[in-house]
Length: 442
Image: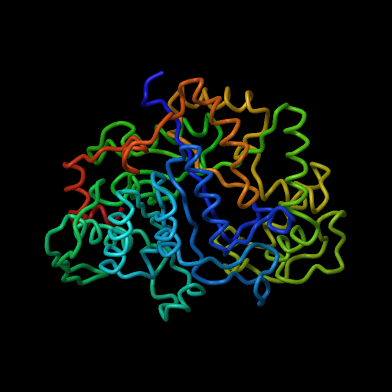
């Protein structure tokens, strides 16, 4: 099988989430450096391309109080990745950093610094935010309209890329005025790799114009193939070659020696990810009130939500839903499927097509299909246990993928090379040019 069809792995250390079984006795600290180091070094032992950190700019709340049922809080990503650069040698270091609440010149300098000191292993996962709740931490609450978030981000990223080009930057734009001259040389990979995860039409166009890798939500094989085709078509419109934008869906792996053992583990994981408290808290976010007297093993609440729309304070997944409309649809769905509250919430929280469950050999064969069809370039894995959640993947799945010729057997020198990326000078120049008014409007 050709090298182009090899799969790469990344690991996503999320922070706030409902995927990590963080109350297990086997769970390590979510803030202690030892957890980050162990997970990164295990991933590097398994030749993972990247160690990927999520970002939390404000502690999430639940009905007006700090939400205590998920992991909360996270050391600064670039500080953590700089520390990990000293105890790893090959794995890529990906920092999620927000375009709304950073300064382009400052962020460009910090990311280029990480790239230089790590020997060409840094990457930036570009995210946008517009909600006033997060913005309140930065005295910018509500200043950015929803429809502006990608034009703002594009202006930001183009400015950063101009700085990385190495020439003096004199930028006058709708969002930023920058006069800056870079102070450090380029790394071995020339500039940090650019990731992005937006899935709206605007987000996909942005990714086609600006990014190297998409962290996607399209995990199922047919869905992944359709997404690949869509991104290739968008990239072609801006003059990029087929498959020049790499695609790495986020996925969960629950694997064991035998199919039966894997199925048993699957049910154990789900039971420990979403228990009675977590299930009720999930519904409370949409009902807008405490459900202390509701039986989590009974049907969804018969009374209607007390809020018209759900809050943003638990994250984008909970934001803006029409509560009564949603409640009616959910009650009908749960009744039709014969699900109680816990069963229903588990089905909503973890999509089956985002999880690979089976024996080591079964999953290796499934992944071989993805490689053969070119559906994806790899997977960004969310471990359900920190810091040991990659051990089985590294010890048992990776060798089976290598035997099939669909996984690397050695590292290259830089993250860019390990992801199968190259620098297209024509696209690099196109990516730093201002968008036309027509493009911005679209």
